[in-house]
Amino acid sequence: MSDTSGSMINVVTVASPLHSERFSSLDADLKIQSADGVLFQLHKKYLETTTGGFSQTGLNSQGEIVQLPETSATLELLFQFIYPTRHPGLASTPFETLAPLAEAAEKYEVFAAMNVCQIRMMNMLPNYAEEIMAYAVKHDYLDIMYSAAPLLLEKPLESVLAEFPPAIAIAWTRYHATWSTCVRSAMLSLPKTFQDGGYSHRKQTREWQEYEGCYCGQPIDSTINKLLMELAKGITSLRDLSWMDRSDLVCCERLKPALAQWRISIESFIQGIPDLSTFV
Image (cartoon, rainbow, N blue to C red; front, side, top):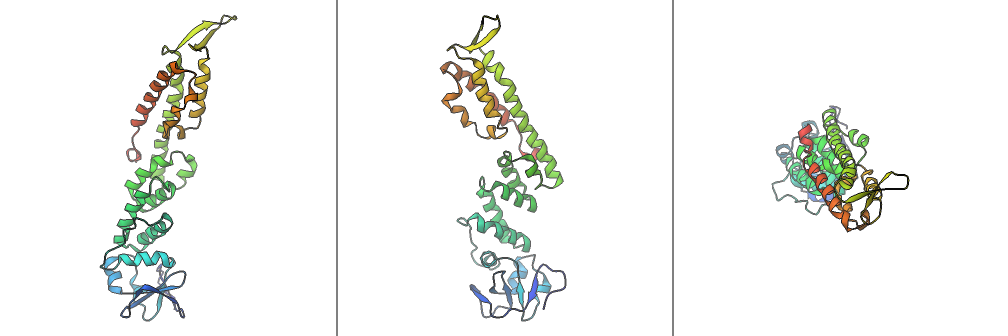
């Protein structure tokens, strides 16, 4: 028999299913089957008191099996959170297991699991930033959203916006634009830093044109072009400034102070960029 009430839980009659060793109590009054055919024998009273997402229509089915679309691995973890025992900490749970568990916890409103999962999802950052941002947006976890936001700046703007509701998409566009402004500012400040900072000298060529050169004899433009090539990578270049430590970026020791000065100005700009929450 199938539930015709429109519930997300389907009631079916299944012959000879596999059984969960952990959830096989003889006095259980509810049978739930996973998508991969494993049967869980549970107690309604715990589902009713510790969750908000299991419909009464599904739980009141007499002698029938409630079938859920989640796998047995996910339900095996999820159902541990409905009983008055020590719950799993999930500290060593891989993301591939945590993600579907977190979704199931939200779907069925298993409150204890929801709390642990959102903490673990936050702790997974900076890994899986795109997936975790999608989870945070879907379930309105603003703290996770704001923590994941800087990690997605290197993604194409269009692909990130496609995952957001309108309000967050607008905020993200403004947030992203602020970082783009920082890139442009860094580019525009390059010539002034290296040409007018006392690190180079001017001389005339045979054609009576001024020539910007380092005191070592190399053209300043060579250094500027190398730095511009790095900045051409966009916001990615500002997310990690360690590339500025490369010895090949400047022609000699005399230009290192100029590079350090330029780096400090960029870091100061970055520190002044507010987080995503400011734009929401």
